[in-house]
Length: 463
Ligand code: BG6
Image (cartoon, rainbow, N blue to C red):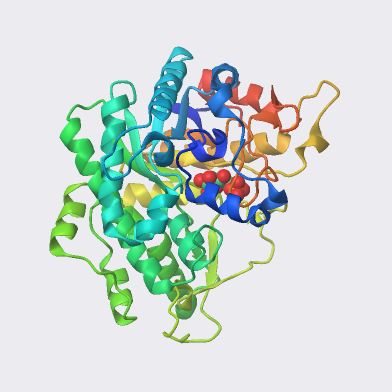
């Protein structure tokens, strides 16, 4: 048995846009808009309209989560649902009541809320009018929205996060065309990277002027994909250095230290694509850093020197500096196409311990998406998802090793509680401890839910 530290937080993560379904018809986020205009862009033509129906079902769903041992739940407040007028900040009464009731219901079920403020869901109106994060003004509007959330719910929600996986916005919306607005524009991606870090700092500034007690914390959730080089050849090492700077350290350092790594600034300057930043903004970022880091970890990166070297600086993209490497013998989650490499969680823990002053963090997402899970239903209608139990156990063993070597990890939140809708995969990949039969809307605990409850109740892993 592996014992975890006292007060270790066991939880699960989800997001508003992936669970709630469409309500408050006056506003759409970019995914609602995209689905309305091009439903076939979504897997099986299934969009965010119903999702797992959390808006209507949360009073039934939360007791199920409690039964699955979830004691902390991260979800998000959708900007497009809470705010009626983005410029004045006037709230929508239906949205405001829903989130308030939801928080009360979580607390009544003994589930501590962790609230995130952006899970990719830019209001469409702001995307159309300003280009979303492309315009720094939207960062000011975002900070006002954040402040409204702190005002309305800060009495009951102690842990706040500005963004979930902001790098996915960059990859999806500005580089590789899997999120709206589907642009491919490397230099713009660099500017948006900066603008999002600035927007996060502006929201944190609002947080600081509202709360100055030790109970409230503010953070950001980063998807960390450590990059491992193909070999120790200098060109491969250089490729991995860039990939780590661009994908990991740029985000970590901005959030934790309020600065950008000198080396990435140097490279982007040499490439002629460095962001536009004023001294005043850089001071604001420096002055408004996080208290708690969320780390989403699913898979590592394997990289090698770019085949054509140097690649052209025209049409700049970050991957002029590295190529992906399909390492022979990698263990894969075949359904999802992602590598399974639990040791990276230990490497992340040690990186945070050694290079970021042992900063407090928690695993804010980790999980295994499996398709056609009905294959594993037994006679009683319970999904026998031993693959999920094994996946979690393998990751927790490495996490435990990191903690026993001094890493400052405060908790583990599984993705996810109830199977939910996702951007490109709709319901293809099921991640939940609880199965959602989307035809009957029946929700049933899987085998992993009972296992997870034992883990969270005992604080001990059966390793
Ligand atoms: C994470 C996101 O990166 O991956 C979630 O924060 C997403 O929103 C999850 O659902 C799994 O991805 P997918 O596409 O397999 O559902």
